[in-house]
Length: 409
Image 1 (cartoon, rainbow, N blue to C red):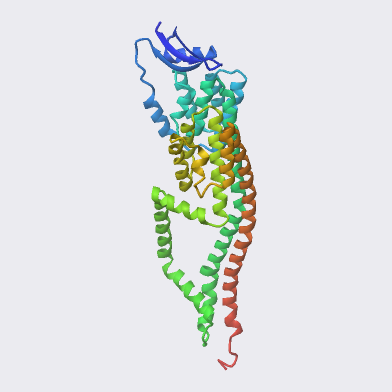
Image 2: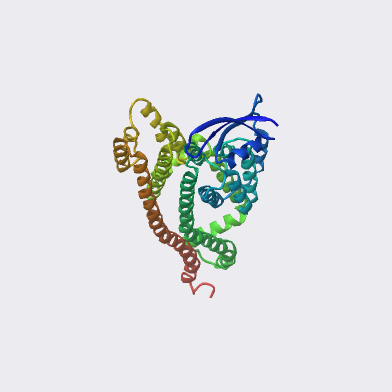
């Protein structure tokens, strides 16, 4: 029977080396798992480790869209099972059998195979970056190294669920305004393309000059009837051009600068990004990830480019002997309160706790600001739709009021 050399960590995080007999590399990994160890490296004595890159690549190409709620459920179930003492491979199998999403099942099959062949849990997740982002992989790796995988997975689950809850609140808050906009656009389109052409035929037959408002509306209706295809093509071209522009580095940076400069919305975006940065960095530091690696991951998960650029400056400041607070102090994007709290955390040695407290505070503010912004947007939409519909109706009625009864007699 083949001999396999292995490196593994026990539940206390101690690295152990040894050798065991097993029929396959996967069987060796499963045996270590059943013994309560977390495999770090397994290879046949005198052999080479070839990995499973081809299979992993096929799995990535096969993967379809997986919802964020599916991922949050995965982390929560894994945390509960590992915390109950279930071996990692068995826990993955249980979660896989309970997962209704076929795409996630395919991913978990590959993760199980990689773990059974001696790959670490974090290393197996890292092969699927679209499903498992760098933040969560780094937290899982830190949990494995410290022998606290169940606690780490529980924190990852908490973070994933809080993010999903925030996104759900945003979607819920914007649902009513979007419905109002869609209904208004449909109503105005029907008025301009179906009702108005029939009514304006009557006005054109009148032997008198139409009011300026009615003439303008008539010109608009005529334009839509004759050139609607060109209009649709122009809007589609502009939309595609804008989409491609904002997906370039320069375009995304400029677009995000415009978003941050908008009243109300810019402040909301800034708070959301600051909360995400504080949550990410605090979680990583609390789990023992080195500060430079934590900052690199925090920058990667930041979506707004100007804020990401400010975060990317922090490592240079640290290598020169300064702290995070001194680097952020000159940034116009980070509020002074956040900078001062970070400075206090660095001075007292409780930076992770301070960052998580900042994240909690700003997430609460974001929730409150979303509700305020929604209540502010709704009357504006109603006012705009009322003005448009009022203009059309008034343009239709004005010629009737201005008819000269002496003509045609």
